[in-house]
Image (tube, rainbow, N blue to C red; front, top):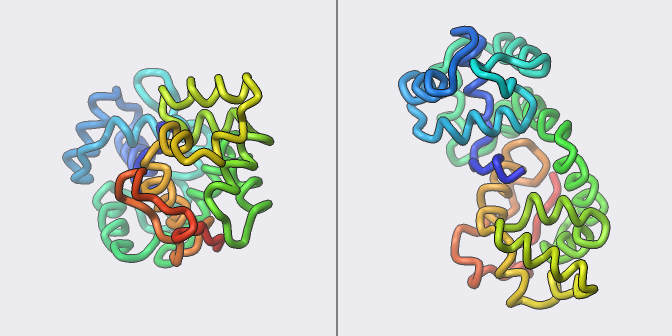
Length: 228
């Protein structure tokens, strides 16, 4: 899930729109199309994320998977036939969320996320903790019930190594009770980009506050995750 690193999940649909319109594309061609027709400079991340969500094939040139074809059908039915159409929709969500402005697309994205095994388990953990989730309570549940989800979705590469060592040595509690540890192992963008994604797809309420500052400045008591 670390490939799902962009704050705006509509960007994950951009490769689908491009391939649906132009046919199979080599990676460089796809990235160029996103830059030229969508005005988006992080095309590599969008392509990687579309693959993670099972919307694009991994082979070169990239084609739509069955789920990608279904997504393209939904997008066309919603009036999105070109990358510029998607760009205009994205612009409409500034200061809001996809779930608030374009609910059918939020549902499409949420379903794509939910089919990903790690995200599905994370969603289960969130619902078990909800409706108001303290971040460290979520971490506690994940490290005990779904440790691989915690390691893969929440930790930096180096942090995952340290977290695994703590889990295997029976020091799991330090991952949510020791401030110096969880601030060291967890990726900063979990608190901003990932929270923003969850708000856009309608998992978290727009009232949830993301955290864009340094990890050392994050106070989970002040910024609970509120389920939609």
